Length: 124
Image (cartoon, rainbow, N blue to C red; front, top):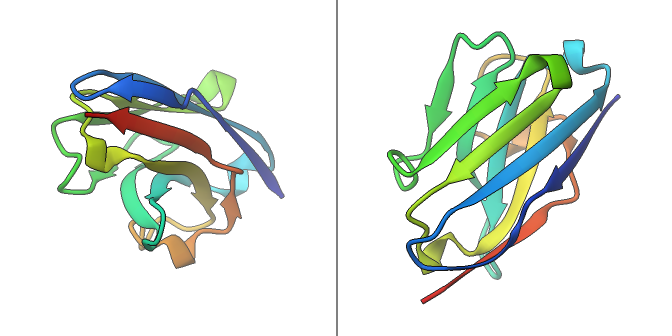
């Protein structure tokens, strides 16, 4: 089992920045890939970014590329999502997720563990 706890959400004006954190615990070695997803009201959960614990690969959704940065601190079992130049359409609940394989990083249905989510609200 892997436990994930997100933090760092909040209310920010358009153009501002937030950094989300995800603390991983448990059998983290069994989940080599971590991703960030988001879900806005009335919409499906969508991929935001993902990385491998090894540091050998990162992926971003086109709508956040160049604005968001995913990173990790392996020693602390932490994954971060630095969000810059935020837009109102970035408003959503953001989830951290972990998976036991290194394929299909962008598919939420392929992730095994999920955090409880943290709300991000961007005002115009």
